Length: 255
Image (cartoon, rainbow, N blue to C red; front, side):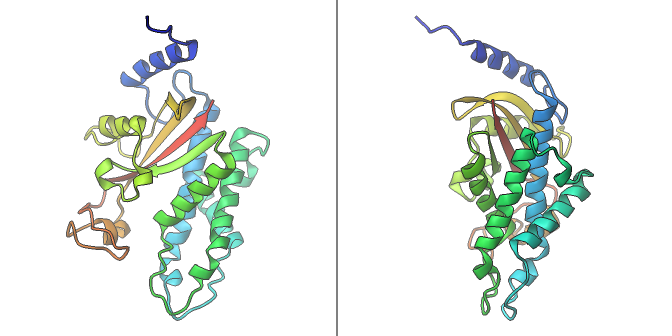
């Protein structure tokens, strides 16, 4: 005899049905709180701001003739805060530090500093014209460090359509695959629109949010064409075009 469905699983099933008929976008939906949505948006925005710091300094980081770049953890966090504020209109230091959003955002900023400080020898190495400290690697390191600090409450991951994932650890799980296939890859999905729902993650109830990312022109040196050519990082190029879906920031907030 099939075991009775727990109250949470009954609720999750009804939420999944609601999601299937249109629970999407930036606003809070059935069972989702405004705080959930705001927290996911903040974590995605800060991750993007941190990666943008690496991107904006990439030529400088890879300069084989220059040693100390002055790009310390403190400097990187200051630039990331400025980028976050420019993107969201909100000062990250003004977020209530006692709130869940404030605590998680602070943890994320702390790990941005941690990752930059831990990689100073690489950033400042002379005689090497490609250091491998690129936005994708930085993002992975930040997300791993964030999970070590906040994994009981939240996780952040950068994934992508399965055929575009280079790091096997970043393969989308079942929920992410469905969001990518049924929403982000559909031609009528509004560009940049997020999706969120209550759904199980790692066997636990959670609020889940996914934010699509698209190839910019600067991405195509590694992810453009000719498809199959080996890029500077040693991976075959995907043959993508500017504006194609290239990745997804996936946020889990455990309940």
